[in-house]
Length: 154
Image 1 (cartoon, rainbow, N blue to C red):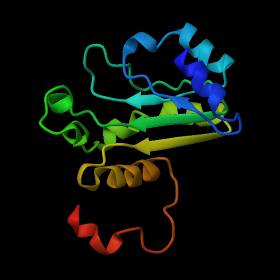
Image 2: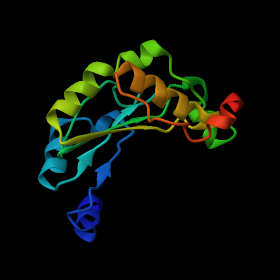
Image 3: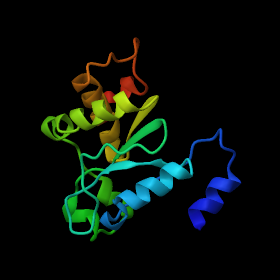
């Protein structure tokens, strides 16, 4: 009911995506519900811990694909002093490479696909985004990247 109220409150031209962080929600009935109500599904990358969703999914319930990378800091996911510690994680090239097939599958089935990095502790998200762009054969923007003059900080 909450998701239906949310969808009704926001004009249809504004995309709304839902991110589930428990494996319970990863089932056909939920995907069907989201599709029926024009609610997008957020595919997530999280640590491989009991109860968390599977990784490398490529579900799409609207014409917009969405993947959100939170990092895989299993040691700090549940036990941390500051919430930001759980996102203190830098992806290896192999971990990002595993995502290439699901990302391409998603991109082939949607009008546009967004890839977001939430492992923003000490600039790790920017570094990982650049690595993934390279793996996908995407060209980096010309000219200095934002904060390039401070690149040595991370």
